[in-house]
Length: 120
Image 1 (cartoon, rainbow, N blue to C red):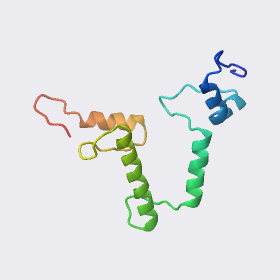
Image 2 (tube, helix red, strand yellow):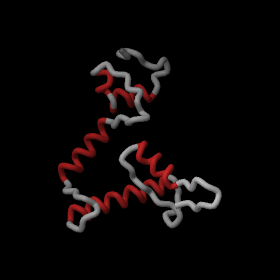
Image 3 (cartoon, rainbow, N blue to C red):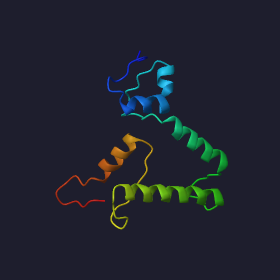
């Protein structure tokens, strides 16, 4: 479908697509459903697979060593997210959800519908 289509300016995105998302061209796919799920780059998959092969991760809500490893990674991710947005961790929290729908549901359920209701 998109084979051979390149920007006339040799856009850096062409190089990014070739390096990180070559599977799209190999399978003749134009992926547009980013509202549901964004695609991962090849380097992300490689880095994540390497991390999973070398590490032992468990339920972050338990107390064993693999659990503590998972919790430490989650806390690092929260801190990095707050730092990226220059958000004060004493004022803001980071909450990970399963997907966009779960995040929107959480926000909607936390909104005080009514004139005398407080916010969560």
